[in-house]
Length: 112
Image 1 (cartoon, rainbow, N blue to C red):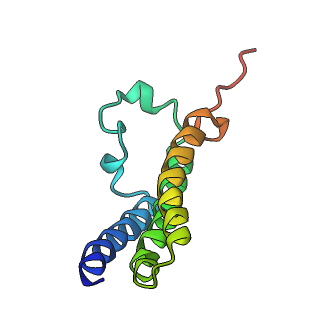
Image 2 (cartoon, rainbow, N blue to C red):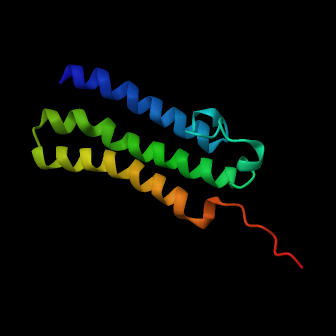
C-alpha cells in the first residue's frame, strides 16, 4: 500500500499541476509536437481550445490515478481494472478527439 501511495500521489499531483498550467495557457512546450511545429503549422490550430481541453484531460486522468491506492488496498479487483481502463481510454480518446474534431482547427475565412 505504501509504495503505491508513494508512486501515484506525486504523479497525480504532477498531472493536476500540468493541467492547471495548460488551462492557464502556460507550459506549451509540454504538449507533444507543439514545440516542433513551424509557425505556419501552429497557425492551423486553435491554441486556447487545444490547451484548455488538454488541461482538463490531464486533471481528469489524475482522479483515477489518485484513487488507485485505495482501490488496491481494499482489493476491489473489478474497480482496479476499470481504473486502469480509464487511465488508458482517457488519453487515447482525447488524442483522437483533438485530431478529428473541427473545434481545434482554425477556420479559414471564405474567399470572396
